[in-house]
Every structure is written in C-alpha cells, then in structure tokens.
Image (cartoon, rainbow, N blue to C red; front, side, top):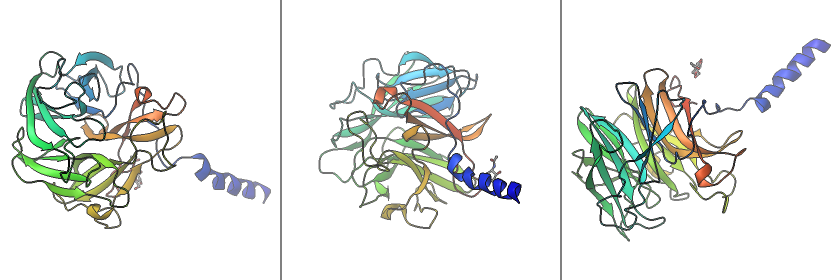
Length: 319
Ligand SMILES: *[C@@H]1O[C@H](CO)[C@@H](O)[C@H](O)[C@H]1NC(C)=O
C-alpha cells in the first residue's frame, strides 16, 4: 500500500512537471534576428528564413535546426513604395509559384494605418537576385477599416488570396493575381473585446484551411510588459474554404472573438508569435515563430527562432 500510494503521488505530480506545450526544437547558428520569420526550403535542400528588420534579413541553413547563417538583405535599398517606413520592412511571407519565389512585405510605421503590402520576386532566393515589384495595391490609410500589413499568400488551386491585417478591425483577405489586388477586402477575424490580432497565416491540412494568427502585445517587453496572458500567443480557427468563414474548436466565429489557443507562453518561452506553418519534407507540418527565451532577455533583438512539429490528429493543431 505504501508503494502504491507513492506511485499515485508521483502520477499526480506529473501534470505540474510536464508542460502541455513542447519546448522549441533545437536551433543552431544565428537564431536571433528572426522576428516574424517566414521559411521555405529550396529544391537543393537549402532552407531560407526571411525576417523583419534589416530590409528583410535573409538567413539560410542546411536544415530547419540550423546552423543558420546571415546572408544579407532582401531589398538592400528598401522598397520602392513611396510611404514612410519604406526603409524598414516588416513581416515577410515567402511563397513559391511555379519556378519563382515571391516575398510579400509590409511598409508602415508602428501604430499608424498608412501602410502597404509590397512584393519582391526571385528565381533562386539568393541575396542580390530579388526584384522589387513594389505595391500589391493592398494599401491602407488613416480612417480605413483595416491596416494593410502582415500579408500571407494562399494558393487555393490557382486562386490566390492575401490574408493580412493588424489591429484595426482584425484580419482581412483579398483576392490577388498574385502580385496585384484583384477584388474586395473582406474581414475574416475580429475580436471587439481584445482587438490586438495580427500576422495571419493560412495553411491547408486535410480538408481544412487553418487560419493561424498572433494575438496580444507583440513587442517591447523589455520596456513594458503586458498583463499576464496579454502577451503574444498563437491561435487558430479553421474553415473548409480558403476564404472562410473560420470558426474555432467550440464552433465560435473567428469574426466574433473566436480562436483556439495553439501556443501561449510556457516554461521559458514567452510571447510566441509572428508564426507561419511549413510542410517540411522531413518533419511534416511545422509551426515556426519567434519568442522570448526568458533565460536570455525580453528585448525584441533577443527574440529567438522556434519551431515545433504540429500534430493535427484531433482535427486541430497541437504542438
Ligand atoms: C497526436 O495526438 C494524438 C492525440 O490527439 C496522440 O494519440 C498521438 O500519439 C499524437 N501523435 C504523435 C506523433 O505524437
């Protein structure tokens, strides 16, 4: 009996010891300089990582785990878009269409709605090969119902949509050609009681399109930390259509505050977000993101690149 109760005691302790969320997988080389990462693997096996800052920093690695090496800027002279912020490009999103690669990027300034989503093109992704195509025509200005940043391209059997948005009325989507706006803007997600949501990423798995997004305060944790639970966290909704309507696990509309938590702060991981999803040939679907390693520091420049395999067996992403 003594042994049995000791065993029960040990089992009862487990939930406290084992986090519900996996720790980030290993990363070697340059794992910082990875704000709002976007990942793709070239057919020669080289992984490319694009990130906010440095006129879109490009890092490459032979594997998702690294070692990551800084290669240079996507657009060393900034964007041709004539807007404040055109030398400080944000939130890259890489996509392959046929034999070409496209990187969507944002031109804006913090907390301002004068924004545009631009796009650049290359056939190899190497530094020095990118041509800036300028604005996609997905733009916004003060007073409009959305903010045109954080674009993500989804290729739905040759129909292209950009899902985008930050803060103002949540997340939106618009048909594109894929390099030019080609339709009206529709809202796909909004939470009136907690409107800080951004960084959408649409990923198809099985018969569902999953809309991943980041909710909460993204940045500046070393200056001012939000209330616990209000920092960046990764959420998801899903739909049988690339353009929605999206609902969460409880069936609540993503346009009415719905959203299922995928990855919040846990263990020494704080404020994970700026995420994307990649169908990796080795690891299967992976969720990648930036996060604060609380053992290192809370400054934006200290944020690290993280990724985890996604288990979709329940019909919802679990990491
Ligand atoms: C995925 O999650 C299910 C529970 O939903 C679990 O039974 C299964 O073992 C998990 N798969 C892996 C590879 O971890």
